[in-house]
Length: 435
Ligand SMILES: C=C(O[C@H]1C=CC=C(C(=O)O)[C@@H]1O)C(=O)O
Ligand SMILES: [Mg+2]
Image (cartoon, rainbow, N blue to C red; front, side, top):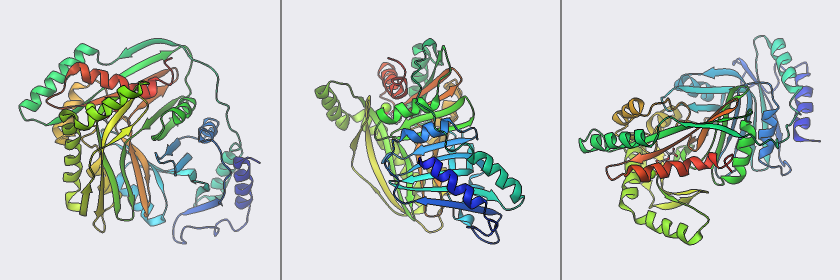
């Protein structure tokens, strides 16, 4: 029996019990019921199973998130409550003692949900939770039964190979060069020290694309990355495979990082190694990274009791390698995830330093709205939280995909080199469909 068939049968049995109102209540005085099923030893399945399951679920939104150390995977369908204010989401999560999933767009818009059904996999342990509102319970049970009717369906990975018809970038090289020159002028005039500029490239195909299939391919190719998918309706989704952690919190222990500074990775092992050594000693890249460290440390300063910055190391990916400095801190009591998110996001790895003039420059010059690109996805809960930075990502709408990639611009930046850098970063997604 598949795990989904097992969950379906067990949930239907639980929902049919006459005492469901009392069953597994979060707390007597609250409006919500949580019905939980735990499978301690899930047999090994491929990570793509959860995406192929989501692909077949008619209940939206869909949320998928897998951390880069691959010991936590979340797959959720439906929303019984949505939050557009971070503090409200945080308060609700604290009050009920539960996880909420979602994130923040680059421009700051907040979207968290309490899913109808949330499946969480921690290594071999699986926890599935169904949430129902106690008011109008009879109706809620019917809605859940309708959702459960379909949860044993899993899609096949398609073999279809959509063909590219046209490609169009928001900024061509001339515009890019001009934007970088303007950024460098502003840096010289001391309006800011760094700004991260991005491009958006849209590919139109001869047939619709499956976000689920693309992300499943990416899971196999972009190792050591967070993988995420957010879809509010059929044939539209935002997906990505990002190397960058925004932060991970366990109780008061906070782990974050400065990931910035880039060199190429190719099939030439020796050249890639020379690039690694060059990156570790290149002053422009070290400075680009240092500004991210400064930005994070400044924003966390008054809410931590200690903070420690590790020396630089290399985070190696399929097409590029980055400078990374890990940062550990202990939060003061009462510092919330709402605090952490608003302080850390958007870091100088995606916005700039100082944050405000850099984001104003981006909004004015870049020529498109970033939305979920360079935003963050993850979860909050009273015990822990974890978020990634939504890089190496794409928006899919029917037969179109828009890829996003950016680069940190400092005074020593060269437009041509930065252009090559964003082209290589875009390969994390483009490499999945461009032969
Ligand atoms: C902004 C992006 O990358 C950031 C993360 C790592 C290295 C970066 C850099 O070297 O410029 C960027 O700060 C992106 O991938 O779109
Ligand atoms: Mg760079």
